Length: 358
Ligand code: CP
Image (tube, rainbow, N blue to C red; front, side, top):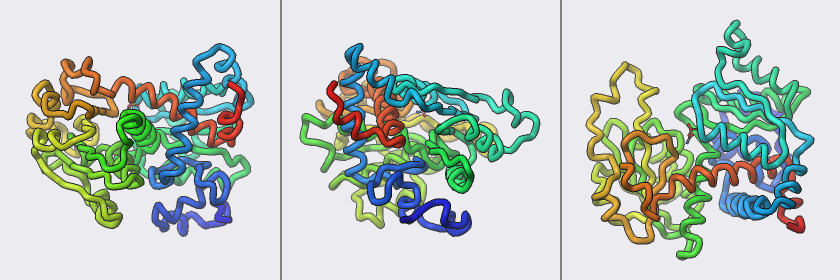
């Protein structure tokens, strides 16, 4: 069995993401993660199990008896939500997911209110949280921090799971889970997600949700990926390399309207100007052709769907919101169910919930 406490950090860090995966599993060979750090931990069987569990939890939660049962499942656990970067959806949906499962929570949402203000390192902060909680759900501007802390905790006397709720410009694995869950539900009664065309548009260079979702889509058969962006914000080389290596059909273009015509799903993203190296750099890029409005909606297939990880600015016009193909509000709520599924599975309660009598 590959255990994270039996490999030195330098050796672990040097592995490819695929090679790291078995070290992060809850049970050897089962595929379900203990630490959730990146999208490469999820293959199709695990995605299907998580989506089935999310469906089961949302069904059970409909009745009072079912909701009370769920509240008892993890009532003996505590989770720390450590968000040192702004968040609405990821924070609140994880919080709501914990509440559904009966987990009590603590939170730090601003490092200025914690001892980091006094100079404590993020590493020491995470070690501190592990003294009081049974899981850490963390968002950080620092790429790789969740991974390093997963290794640190697994090599400490308080090994508790970490869920990466967004790390730098790098990965946002639980967002990718909810995006996949939304796509699978959208096409559930229309022949499934296999063979579809997914169009990504916006800031593909710095959007961590794009990197994570693009990878998960490679778990499906013949899903074509189209990347639409201004040249300065086009999809980064590492994503292209993975697609090429996995033999995925993909296209890089700057023509949104042409791309929408062939799309089954369009995934819009906002310009991530918080990462600008020089103030105002993004504002100098012409993004006017990378917005989805009434004209683009006319071009979208009748059974297509429009997604956005949110928050949005003006990249999807408000006039699209009431169209039945606009999925972003449902997508956001799906995040709560799939995160509840992930948390329950992380603690080993997948089978209990799947087989309970509700
Ligand atoms: N999609 C997403 O990560 O939203 P928040 O930044 O509001 O959490």
